Amino acid sequence: MHLNLHKKASKYLIIINSDTDYLKKKSEQLGYKVFSINNLENNSLIKKNINTDIQIFRKYLKYKEKIKLIYGSGLEGQKTIYDFLNNNFEIKGNNLKIIESTNNILKLRKHLHACGLKIPKTTLVIPGNKSNYLSKPFSSYGGLNIKYATNKEGNVYYQKYISGPTYSISFFIHKNEFIFLGFNKLIQLINYEEHPFIHAGAIKIDNLRLSNKIKKSVKQLSQKLKLNGYNSFDFKLFNNDIYILDINPRITSTFKIYNNMYSNKLLNMQINPDQTENLKINSSKKKYFGFIYMFSKKNQRVCKSFLEYRWISDFPQRNNIIKQNEPIFTINASSNSFKNLIINLKNKINITMKHHNCYDVSI
Image 1 (cartoon, helix red, strand yellow):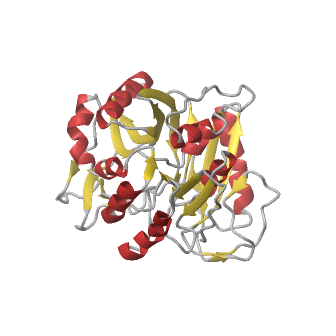
Image 2 (cartoon, rainbow, N blue to C red):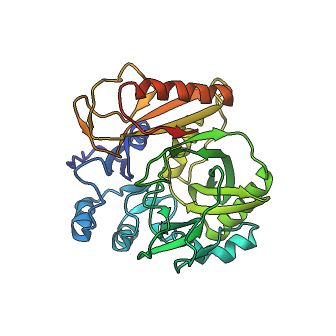
Image 3 (spheres, helix red, strand yellow):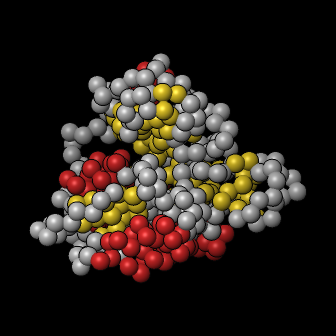
């Protein structure tokens, strides 16, 4: 990545995320010169080499221009870098201290209960009866390294597994106003043993059982945590209770669903919180959206170009080698009905699996 800041340019943005393609494209549409740092390039931040990682950012400090920074994921557990970024850059959305503090859901138990929310039975000590318990890292994203508990591990906590679908609520905090965006059903891969709970996509859904209670409780919690910008909470419903699994005070993959619905206005407000956009959905846009990450079941060469399929994104170049258990591409779909959305997604999954050996998904 080379810096090329021209004197005439005045809008610069650093994006840190596991995949920056979407945010980079949409930020450029807003007129920003974007410098992206992600896990798909040579400047990956998952090196656990603090000096090298900080040096990536230090090069920006010699410029007088104020560079804004958007954080999605990629630096989990790297407190030293969090502190460096907090002290030297204008971070849009939630401060990285908030992101760090919400990693330990046990410390939020009091706030959750005060807002009518629960967490599954959770302990720092591996249970004597490990069946139906999950081992979860304190610092993680996208479901990585969450697995069924077997042996005691370091820097993890243990949480009772609750069966049934996992959902998330997406919302935006703008000038202390809570803006509900929507509910999503999270997608899991089938028989992906290395990371059985890895995030494999999401589908926008209608209102859920307890919808009003969920929105009211999440609004109260967001006020207690003093959140800003885009946020999402993962949760499950069980016996008329709302169990929060993860708090994500940052841009997550579901952001693109709602940013597209509002014609890139959410991203503009994330970057420029002093501005207020008229968040009116274009009536011509479809109501239901979904995306699926297709993961490779074995090492394989990209044998086909899918450029003619406009519903595929993040696709690697032809003849690239994709390693086992790594994502190959993203399937995107939209429809005017939820039923047709599911049919649409399944058809597209079938098309892609004819050409690449991928894990199936549970929709």
